[in-house]
Image (spheres, rainbow, N blue to C red):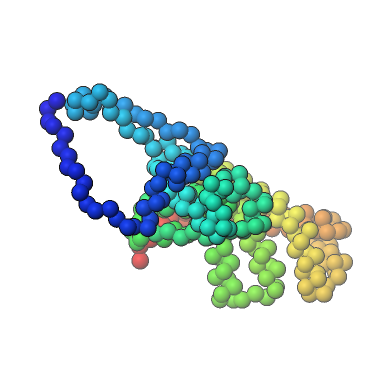
Amino acid sequence: MKDQIKWVLNTMPKSDDRQLPIMSLSNVAKARFFHSTFPQYSVTPLDRLDGMAQYLGLAGLCVKNESFRFGLNAFKVLGGSFAMAKYIAKEMGRDVSEMTYDYLTSEAFRKEFGQATFFTATDGNHGRGVAWAANKLGQKAVVHMPKGSSKPRYDNIAKEGAAVTIEGIKILLKLLFKGTSTAFVGDFANFFVGCCFVLPATVWYHTHKSKNGAILGLTIGTLVMTVIGTAFNAVYLLPKFAQLYGIPMEVLIGMGTAVHSGVTGVFSFVALCVAPLNLVKGAVVSLLTMLLYKRVAGPLFRIHE
């Protein structure tokens, strides 16, 4: 052994910090049990550092490799997710040992507790872990990032539900500056149909990050928006507008017949009048996205003034 390991005895007086019990063995056991209920859970490996052990004169030296933790490349998701479980348990007057993954994602829990929004301020792995845990548990998360945060860090955090947030902001701005002229019926439809485009496109692109992946994702988003949006018009939007404005459905169908002679009912109306418009809308948005995304993504996501 080349050098003796130097150490000193900790002589500091015991603290009366009320947060210290969180590190008790009973709480550690509850935390470990909570994390083990996640379907993504697995035991992370111990990596041997034989060269360092030999250098220090030790029989063996191992390091816990937390880069495998939940596929997030960091251990910090453990603290954030357990803090969520403890908060929920406290609000419900229950013990955290009852907060298993299956229970927190169940319909019974949703009806009893609903949703909470968890806030944190970071651009690192803690924020990513909070966003991931909230997404998996059906909760909400808001992560405040400092000015100058890099785009990769933003992407790691924002991919957990960011698409819906952006679509929601668009509708919110419209309501703020223009108000609603449809008693929120059209605004809700706009949000719903927009999400039908954004979500499939975003999910596909985040798992196939290439130019071809982006094109295919936008194509999938356009088709999903067209199919679901068309059906949504037939079963909700047209009947709701007819009720809102006191217009008989026959009159609305007649308007469609004036545009296309094949329109004879609600379903032919949406198939011949609404579906083509959704296809055109999806194509235009896809084209603009391909032309502008790379140019605006850097300045927008870098969060400079």
